[in-house]
Image (cartoon, rainbow, N blue to C red; front, side, top):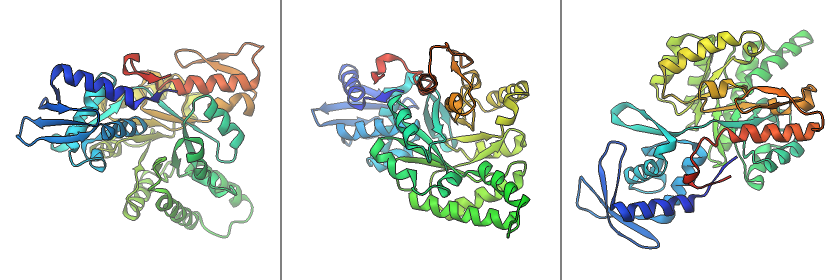
Length: 377
């Protein structure tokens, strides 16, 4: 995993600014340097004569924020300063060679880092393994809401202590599996009522944690094989919270619905329903993903439950998986190769060493960044 050294990045920006005397927005507008000191820079834009003061500490905070979110629009900079356009331009200046640009409506833009961030999942009730993930530089986790409901302690409370971040999945897949088991025995409620009760609990949980800076977003409660119900759940959640909600599109769903989601300009869209096809119908996935990548080349996609060569082949923005635990769970003693495929591990490697090496590989997929940016490896 890489860590962002915002101080070094900001200092490099200062040196470039002093040498050039200006920096540019995504649209090519000029911000002229008037003065700089150890605490602030003073600039004016090509549109006006008023001098703008921006604290260097503020710039560093924006750099840190961008690194953890990996994708921002100008409006995201408003929480740091009234001069959000200039801050957005500074982020672009610092990261333009390692980012992609998505043009939005009203001539606005989204900047997103390249590389793939993998969120390590399956750790809601495993503090020991969470510690191992942390030791191998795995700073980003995915928590499953269903697993949280089965736990005695909310794992979100450990994020600050461990200096980690997470996204929270609705746990829809786990919920449906559990409901099927209950149905075979005695279930007091219909599936529809169970869904409503579960969704209400999930929304309450979202609102409880939506302002936690270490929670980067919440993945909606999707209904596998029922696009209409998935849309209804998404709208219901959006009506009842202003949190960062990440929609889900199933790879077997309609392109029309995916087009609607892309048109809504979400920072990230999850691609779900891929896991059943990975072992036996991967060519179907490649055909589907190839079409999606060609049709929506600048959209950020999160691959739900995927941690193999598909991440590199199709430029996933992020993914989540428990695959790093396969050596312990399934006696699957394989390690990743450079291209994302897995091969039999050397016999002298213990299961723990295999797990550690696989964590390092997956965390390292985010390192698609030139070393001159000065990240800490």
